Amino acid sequence: GLDVVEMIIRFETSNRWPDDPMAIMRIKTAFYIQLHTAFQNEFGDMSSSSAHDHIDVLFAGFCFRMRILYDREMAHRESLAKASAAAIMQQQQRGHYADDDGVVLAMEKAKIPARAFRRDLIARPKHHSLIRSFSLKHPTYGPACRIAKRWAAAHLFSSRAACSLEWMEAAAAAPEDEIGSQLGPKTIGPRASLQPLQRFPDEAIELIVAAVYVNSGSASLQSPASSLSGFIRFLDLLGTHPWKDEPLIVDVNDEMSLKDKSRAAAKFVERRGKGGDSGGAAMYIITKDDPESKVSMV
Image (cartoon, rainbow, N blue to C red; front, side, top):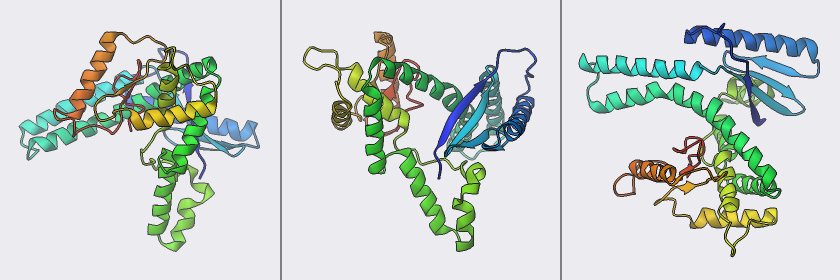
């Protein structure tokens, strides 16, 4: 299958956008349909397909997935999450849930859409903007990242490799007459909605490699002078950092205060639990814009 290249479309601020979340979604869907029509009319060598929440454009062997970001939509989604939480609490008072675990699970499910929106349309674009500016300062950083990602994929650690495994499992479980419809090239739209298994996101690899450059300021250890050196130090950091006991703090632009780092460490301890053996993800990678490791969590 094709790797999907995510793109964000942002418009100038306007008061003509509605406040109702359903109306916002319908306007965005109308934009996707108009974009699809424009691509078909203006660019004959491009193939596109629109959905209610994105448009896919196939060009030169790549699939570009475009989503529209409305600046005030995050606030609307958080309001919906709060309203859902209030409704859940009312249902609890009426005896709708048998125990507290059911309430906690329902509350977490209510927060998923807002969290996914913040991660995919706000946090990840910020991350990639940060990494782009960082790569301009360190010429060997980009090639070192590519080697690290290739290494992760070769060992089936990356999300792309996990996605391939998921597709193979789907093919093995499906009847023979359905395999073609599931894995064929015409299924970029519906089948691409399958979420890959989150094993080692690209953002995590990029930040671990960046940590090699950021934390190499001492006289005894300078920043890597070659991509191979950067990759070797990536492997060393990956294998020696005490992931169970502390997060990896990557202060790319040297703008995190001691208070910021202490707050991130306290949040890490809270998620890990009192004994340090339970709770949370395997790795927490902290940055200024992502103090809870929502983008790069492994």
